[in-house]
Image (cartoon, rainbow, N blue to C red; front, top):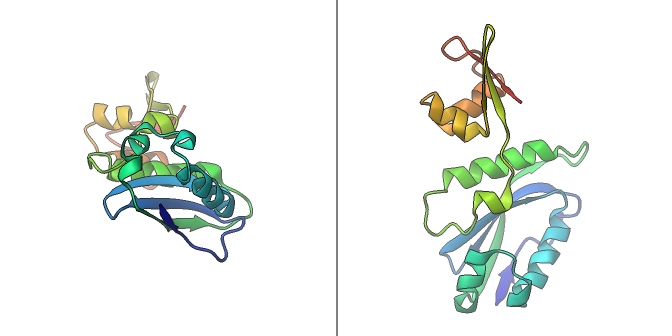
Length: 161
């Protein structure tokens, strides 16, 4: 399998990346050191026994080309892993209904609990998605509310629990 990837300027780069397999299937990931992650993917793609992701194992023998592209980067100092994980989660959720996406959220990212507050009333949700569904808003809107970009929503304050 041929693996196409950036070769320069990847050391200590914090990034969300996408690997496309045969211009069809794709995987979205993130790393605090893109150069090391590229090396790990090179090693994994040489041997199906090293592939950790079930959906990728299922198509492994039919793939001839894998191409890694950087979607977003952060400045290396200080390393903000929460921000990069949120970017990764956002990219995955934007593509989650696409049958060619090889990620599963359970494999890649833990959920973040959310509190909904109004006066003494408190409702706890297991994830941003659960809070969004309960309040009839999309995931990105709930994320904007939680990050303070939209303030209150219907008189409620939302915070990460």
